[in-house]
Length: 244
Image 1 (tube, rainbow, N blue to C red):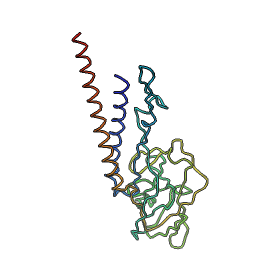
Image 2: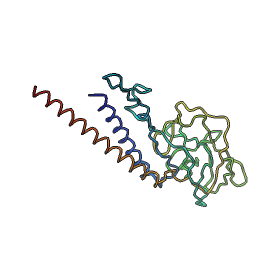
Image 3: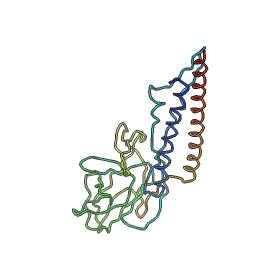
Image 4: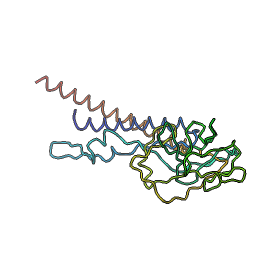
């Protein structure tokens, strides 16, 4: 396949990934604490360079053009008041530390519950980790201050383990609002505040996504027409040569 057709195919693959990502974002516009997907413009780093009779394709990575990178926009979502004592939202860039099936994850989810063993958990089942491990509650009547300290019947019973990362974009998203630590380094500083009686809503903006959907669709269709035109040109050239 020629370099020109390869370039167009790679552009179409990137557009297809964008369309998938936009669909995912729109489907989660009302999902608590959802962080929108962003497809990086890696294929834009390609250069088409005419060198005498040769057209060459260059990129800064051997396969960056073939595999556009999907990242997460970790910007703050709007905090919505619920007045539910078992709802919390993080105002800042921190993450709650949770445990699921023996593994540690990080999340922005904040619908809390108390399991059958009295362990503070998320309603989706993950156990909330405090600075000293699991946090045990006697019922759901609890006060949670802005530092994440939990007070029940006037007694301080633990503190949420809110963590920050120096390079949070290196976290791996594993689904269901959970992130796994890969190359991200935990930071010793952070200014996240816990807000009881609130939840963080999705940071997806429907208008922005719809605009991106239109742009990606048009670009995909234009690339498709270029590919068809180039293919037709090749067929014509082959037929012309066959007549000699």
